[in-house]
Amino acid sequence: MTYRTSKIKTLLGESVCAGTEAVYPKPVLSPFFQPFKVLATETISHRALDADIHSAIPTEKVDGTCCYVTTYKGQPYLWARLDRKPNKQAEKRFKSFLCSKQNSKEFFWNVEGDFKLVPEGWIPAKEIEQLNGNPMPDENGHIPVEETSTQYCWHSSVVNYEREVALVLQCHPEEPGLLEITAAPLPDLLEQTLELVGTNVNGNPYGLGSKKRPLHLLIPHGVFQIRNLPSLKHSDLLSWFEGCKEGKIEGIVWHCNDGCLIKVMAENSLWHYVVLRS
Image (tube, rainbow, N blue to C red; front, side):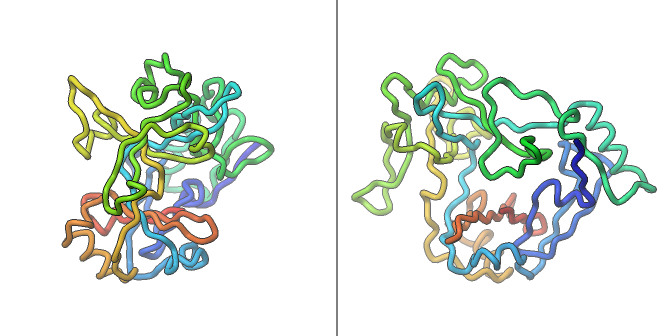
C-alpha cells in the first residue's frame, strides 16, 4: 500500500493563518520532515477563517511535551507522545527526492514498510488521518507510561495509579488570576490532552524545581486564556508578541467553536517563521 503526496506541505499538515502558504525545500534536512520555510504575510488562511477564528477563545501555548489521558489495563493512564518516523531506507529515499533537481512532483510512501515499528501499546492520536487502518506518515501518537518506566521517568513522577491521581497545575476555582497545584483525579482527565512541564522538559523555560529537587506538572490544554488579545492584523500581533509582557510566550492556541485548534508559534519573536497549524 502506498501513500502519495504531491506537496510536502500536505504531508506535514501545515496550515498558515497569518500568511500565504509557501513551502521551500532545503538541501540540508535537520531534523527530518522539516524541509521547508513558511513565510508569513498579512493574509489569514482559509482553514482559520472556516473555523471562525475571530470568535475563537485564545489561550497560551504551553512550552512542554504533549501527554494524553485515556484507559489502559482497565484504568485511567497517562500516555506520552511518541511520533512514528520513517526507517533509514525510506528517509534516504525521501531526502534524495527532495534534493533532486529533476524529481517528479509526487513522492510515494509505502505506509506498511517505510516506517519504524512502534512499541507495543502505541496508539495514533485521535485526529490522525488513516488509510486502511494505517496512520499517515509523520503523524504523532502516544504510548502508555508505566510508573516504573526509566525512559519516561518524568512523566511517571506526576501520576499515582494506585490512588488514580495526577499532579496538575490549573487555575484556582475561586480566585481569578491565581494558579494552584492539585492532585487531580485521573478519571476526571480522561480523553484530555495536557502538557508536561518541569525541570527536565524542554530546557525548563518556567524555572520549575532544581537539579537536586526536580519538579514536574501537568497543565491541561486551553486552561490559560489570554485576555485583551489584539486583532489578527499582522502588525497588531507582532507588536503584542514583541512589545508587551503578556506576549512573552511560546505561542497562541485558538479554540474554535467546531473543536478545531489553531496555533501560532512565536519562536524568538521572529515573525518570518510564525506558523499556524490546525
